Amino acid sequence: MKRNYIILLGLVIGILISLLAFFYSSKSTSKSVIEYSVYIKGAVDPTLGKEDAKTIIIEYFDFTCPHCAHFHLEKLPKLYKNYIENGKVKFISKSFLLRPQSLYPALASRCAYEQNKYWEYSHKLFDEFLRSGPFAYNRANFIRIAYELKLDTLEFIKCFDSQKYKDIILRNVEEGLKDSIRATPTFIINGQKIEGDLPYEEFVKFIK
Image (cartoon, rainbow, N blue to C red):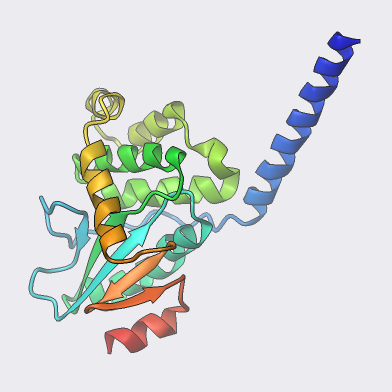
């Protein structure tokens, strides 16, 4: 009887996992990775654009947030092409952890940042999250993405396993709490706080 119960429970769990994977797969945007070549190298937090930009956008986000994923895959490339690359906007990215498991993709992205591939790596993480849900966020996948982006994989593994950037990520969270961040994504555009994944046209209004 007990054995039959365990088998039945395993089947139910398997079906639930399959349904979740299908749900996230149907929402995938699967955009090709854009190369962000204009960024401030060595900034404490990953920063796109030029130092003297008149408009500063600070983003607080979480890798397990679907709205954050849609922003990064659909709107950030447009903002980069039209306003960031030409020096009009500086875009600063900060982690804000909504749940404990959010730490691990944040750590992986920081290890990619160490090798100047933060934006490409984050793009891949978000794309896989929309296709596979939270199941995409595991150590094997983090390493595979690093390999695909031609990072020094051994250095990446050492960085990730040591949780080298945990303190910086938690500092981002503390900064967000001081800024009264309650949800992700939240943007601070020249000091004005904006919550939610706005339509692209709304970002343009704030920039102008």
